[in-house]
Amino acid sequence: MDELPLDQVRTLLAVVDEGSFDAAAAALHVTPSAVSQRIKALEQRTGRVLLMRTKPVRATESGEVVLRFARQLARLERDALAELGLAAERGPARIPVAVNADSLATWFLPALTRVPEERPVCFELYREDESHTTTLLRQGRVMAAVTSSPDPVAGCTVRMLGLARYLAVATPKFAARYLTGSLAEDLSEAPTVVFDRRDELQDTFVRSLTRGRSGAGRIRHMVPASDAFRDAVAAGLGWGLVPEPQAAPLLRTGRLVELAAGRPLDVPLFWQQWKLDSPALSAVAEAVAAVAAEALLPPGRGGGRGAPGARRDSRGAVPEARPVHESP
Image (cartoon, rainbow, N blue to C red; front, side, top):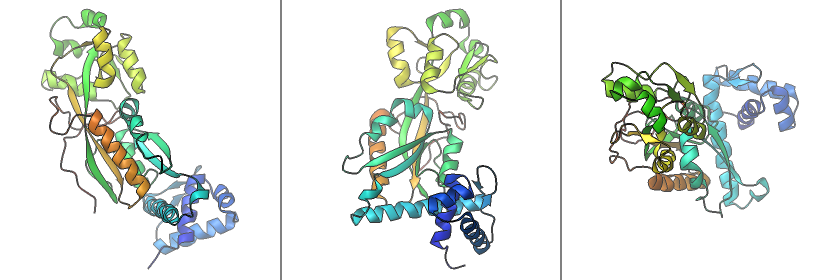
């Protein structure tokens, strides 16, 4: 096999995006039989099954490789047409990005407004947990992601954005009721607000206080949205780790109190993107990096405790920071 026929690659992309062979046929203005023949020919050419014939159709692991190539090819084609002045009728560039919930609720949206107006862009945001953001990159469904993983996905570059600081907080009434003795022991019993079932950040924080003897309490209120998570803590449902920008106004007014002053938890955040020479993607990356430099703590200057491998939910996991590099 010397090449991947472009019509077959584009057909694979259409089938996955549209969800079925019939819908892809309508989008491509060909017959369903032609779509089926192209996919079969591509699978024979690669010697691999590329699609799971489910509803909707899903790419296999091998299919994801070809799918990522198809999306990158489409991006390069659009950029080339734009430079030739032939893409105006196609509208603005579409940039799909995966981002964790807390970044989306605090600093990420202002970054999108920094993209120069002379480079029209339509953003398609996916709010997903950390492990899934990298999966979306591998599948080719997004071109970039805010993630806590410093290990680049194949075909991607990675750069560190900074440290997101979290504070352990609760209402004064909650603290007076539940936190009357040893903070470590009280937090291991007190009601807790968590993001979802995979949210281990509160457990990790308590383990840092108890030297690993116990995690957070068993009464756990799951609130899978960043603003609602903060509001649940502010309502007194439990204690939780809230991003500093969200906690600060409530701390100033006294609605919340910090439970362990001087013991914040700092989460390293990274930007991963396709390794493409795309002007639109580069403009987004620079805008994100500029705002992150203003909103996040600089790497190496966080005074809080890290939590390696702790949180793997939509609010971002927390590995130790390592040197930034590219995938092969």
